Image (cartoon, rainbow, N blue to C red):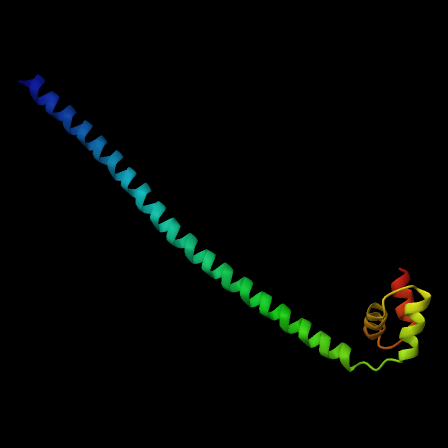
Length: 112
């Protein structure tokens, strides 16, 4: 009878190990689902951050364009820079505006 009792004890240990393995498998499965949910939340947060960053960049670019448009430049300087450096007038004008109308600084920047 001891052998039978001993066998039953072994079966319970085996059953206990099986239950532990099943429990671990279930935990892994639920962890993956939770990880996926966390990952989707992170993706949404990252996308929102990218969108906000892009909007901030666009706003800064618009502000910069307004600042450049407000700079007074001499049209003769644009012509001289465009002709002497063989550039498009738009490039010469933009560079001149970026250097606050200073033709020497604009030429230096274009030559570097």
